[in-house]
Structures are given as C-alpha cells and as structure tokens.
Length: 109
Image (cartoon, rainbow, N blue to C red; front, side, top):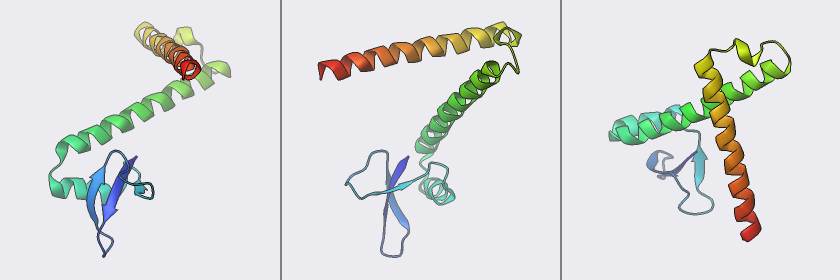
C-alpha cells in the first residue's frame, strides 16, 4: 500500500511507502489517482516499485491457484513443465524457511 498526503482541495501532494503519522490515508497501489500523480511528478522509479509489488502479489495468487487446482485434482503437479515444478517447489521451500525464522524471532522476542 501507498500512503498519501493531500492538500485542502483533496489533491495528492506527497506519497510515502510508510505512514508518516498514524491516521495517514492509505491508497491502493493500483489507484488511478495515485498513478496519475506519479506520472505527473516523473517518479518512474516509484512506479516501477509499485509494479514490482503488484507482480509479487499476482505471483502469490497464481501459486495459490495452482495449489488449489492440484488439491482438487483438476491438474497434477507432474503435468506442469519441469521448470515450473522446480520454481514452485523452491518458493514453497523458501516460504517454509521464512516461517521457521519468523517463529524463532517471535520466540526470542
């Protein structure tokens, strides 16, 4: 999500990746208003970052969709191309490792 600051007329005057104060307004990274502001300001790097965040979210949706199709026996994992099987397995392993690390951090803290 992106956090925005507005002027008295309600126009976006600044954007932030982290809230600057608790009641700061949150906008979807896909908001037309936000994308227009970014274009107007020439902040191409921020636009690229928002696009990358969207790509990551879509990738997770596709993983969940593939898992659901396999679980419901609509497709078999072995029907996927070998490189796709390997990438999916690698991401599952990385998520499992991240969960273990998070549990350890939570335990220590």
